[in-house]
Image (cartoon, rainbow, N blue to C red; front, side):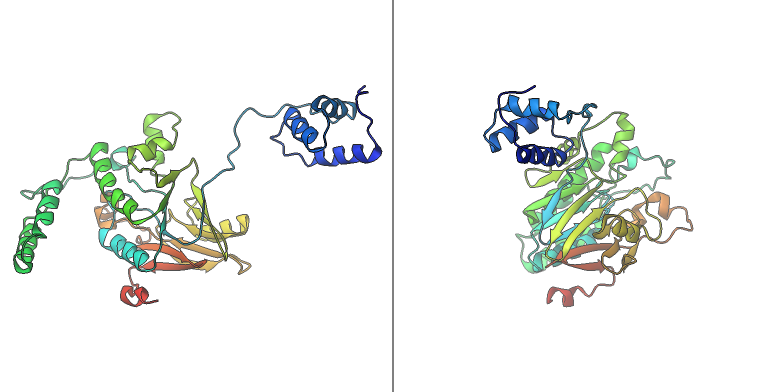
Length: 342
């Protein structure tokens, strides 16, 4: 029995109450150290009293980590779902990024499937489309840059000539896909102060190919994301705003009403990727937004979709800007000029 400190009834009740409120991942040793410092006791006295009172844990804490620390961003942000680079829809993406800049949006969230990883997919091989002539992307970029030094008329003539020549198709492969993605994502990085990367099922193709666990930071390094980028081992992230929390989702389920069900389950607004569908609605209570954001991949560049028809709904271009806590769902029919003035 501990005789180093006299414990009054109030002392005992306070210890019992505080111990009961102890987070499950805090050990008795850690608790005793903090409690003793707070109430000017020795750590040994606190641990002995816990033992005397029969409060000592019987089952030790699990040695495995808890997955309870997804990325959290605050304020305004543009949310880009399913870019699936290098099969992205450049025209739509540029319109979204241009509007983001017009509205002064300084943060971006890449809502999963940032990479397509076509060469790692489980789809059957595609019929190839062979193209003759054309110039490689790097040469085209240099010529376009050079054209800016020419007089306006000559500049237009050179750009038209480059367009008529066309671009040569790149060889398939992970290296080719990553090379294109790095270049385009670097341009996105330059536009924003912070970029959060949510994992998607296409990033999971890399895990299946490697057949091993993988630190998500390796994906960031593969893409040369830089200091502005954050990534974690989650298929969702949070955006906290004055109008409540938005949960950016790339869920396992993408069936009808998935966004609404997620909103009801997690009691927050949902911005959902993965389904490639557009849907702006609420949870059953009418309290939380439940939005399917569409996608930013070009359906006509996906061989498994474009070469052979199926009965699935057409992929819908879409993205969301959250400004002052309110969501703006952007799509192919958006009046971009009018939106710039809002």
